[in-house]
Every structure is written in C-alpha cells, then in structure tokens.
Length: 218
Image (tube, rainbow, N blue to C red; front, top):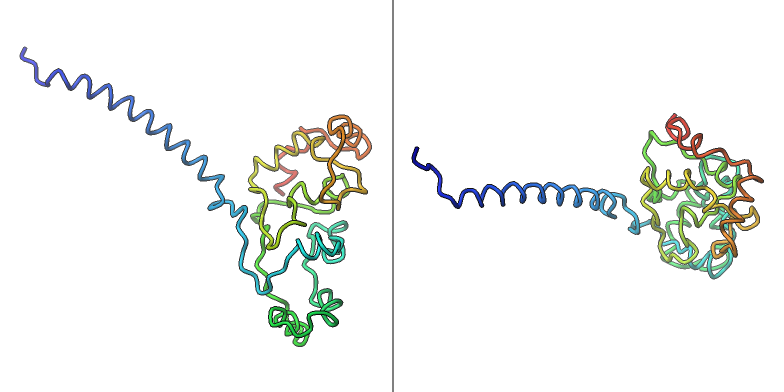
C-alpha cells in the first residue's frame, strides 16, 4: 500500500502532541498566577477616596491607637468606620481651612456619611468576625500588614480562601500576646514556643475544627 503521508508528518505529530501538553500546562500555570494577581484580588491597590486619609501619618507619626477610630473591633464582627465626629474631634482645631478636608466638614454639617471606598471586602458567602480574632490573639498586622506605614490604605493580602486556611491550619505562627495585638511593629523572640503557649492560653481550637466549612461559610 502506498504511503499517504510524508514521513515528516511523524515528527510533526509528535511535536504537536508534546506542544499541546506544554501549552495546557502553561495555560494552567498562567490561570493560577492570574487568579492570585492584584488584578483579581485587588491586593496592593490603593483606591481613590473622597479624602486621602493617611494611616502612616495618623497611626505611624501621631501614634493614634486603632481603637480610637475602629471602636467596635474588639466587640463586633465589623471593625467599624469612624463617624465624621471622630475626625472632627481634632479637625475642629487643626487644618480647619484645608480644602482637602472639606468633604469631612461638609459631612459634619449635613450629617451625611462620607462615601468611603471599601478596601477589604469579602464575598457575601464568607463570615468573618473581627472580635474573635482579636480575642484569640491575632494582631491587626497579620491581616492588614503594616498599615501604620501606608500613606494610602490598600489591601495587603489576597484574602483568598487558601490564605485564610494557611492561618487556620497553623494558628501558632500568627498569635501574639493580647497586649501586643495593636502594636504593628511587634515581633516575637521565639515564635514557635510562644505560639504553642498562646494556643493553650487562648484555647485555640484544633485545625480540623477551624478548617470546617461551617466555620467561615454559614
């Protein structure tokens, strides 16, 4: 029987098959990288806000405690957005004529909230409680990063499920004494031994319990 295809088609077929395998692998790798990128997760992206509030100035330079503005972080699932009155406690006396702060003064005059752009925004099917994390010894910086060094607030971490699970599987790596929860710069001398000690003191549940679906999805 005469040969229908040229011998070179054998080589072309092999190259095509192996090329397709590498192409699929490359697409999977690209999808994984893209899924974790700032374009999807919005991490490290600073949103345009009505007022360019600087945590680096208020927290890092002036030393204002997180709880002065975020009053409910220890008692509620929501950290709380400070009312305009909190801002005006200081700005009735300083920077009173600043054009940059006019939206704050207008909000105070009219009683209308400042339309802040939310930075950390979990999906509706995810349940997150600030108070339980604070009560168990998780510091602000563990999730929000060094927010005291941010001129404009941005999301430090991806907030993907895999990021949450890494902490829930190994909570000892993220615990700190309760007196250091709001200390952004604190670092332990011996994280391993301190983590195990805090696990016992704070009665941290087992990784099996903390990675149960119902813990975060209710």
